[in-house]
Amino acid sequence: QKEVEQNSGPLSVPEGAIASLNCTYSDRVSQSFFWYRQYSGKSPELIMSIYSNGDKEDGRFTAQLNKASQYVSLLIRDSQPSDSATYLCAVNLYNFNKFYFGSGTKLNVKP
Amino acid sequence: GAGVSQSPSNKVTEKGKDVELRCDPISGHTALYWYRQRLGQGLEFLIYFQGNSAPDKSGLPSDRFSAERTGESVSTLTIQRTQQEDSAVYLCASSSTSGFSYNEQFFGPGTRLTVL
Image (cartoon, rainbow over all chains, first blue to last red):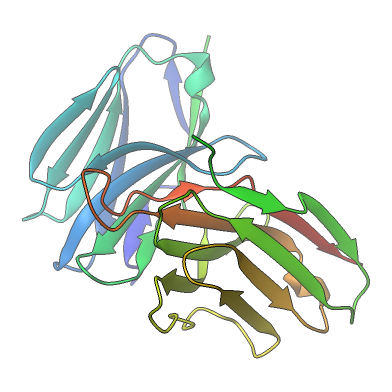
């Protein structure tokens, strides 16, 4: 079992819709959670970090964390074609060195 | 401020040659990571440096790979006797281990290595 699992997609949504990206992780000790966006041919770009259960909002992005169920999600409201990219979920064990990245979900936002 | 920088941006080499990749982390970031990303694949952890502590080398795929970092500054990743399967983008990231941005990794633009 992989430490971090993501649906590879592609996930297709129409422009203006809400895109919902999900991620599950296996280690209950995981403490820090991150979402990265990666455009084709570019390096990952940090979008959100979340450390506590619940929701965290930043503009059109909302990260949701449920430690009991071991999942973290990213909602993108009012999706734009420019949001089309691969979204990587990453988890980190508190005070440990390793970051575990999912393989990413490819999002296509259709105009 | 300046982000993570990497050089060269592209490197083409012949099989069997050694290559050296460089990473300049964000000033003040004590943690530095190297990852490998093959075409269409996810990120593969290679090595982690934290301050003056012994590095975590558990992700290095073979003894042909090595990395160094002096204090909290520049790091170099060296691949000896390159093989075609080493072709990938090598990404460096740095992070702070304190404050509100705890453990948020920021990535450099990567070095695209092609082994002919």
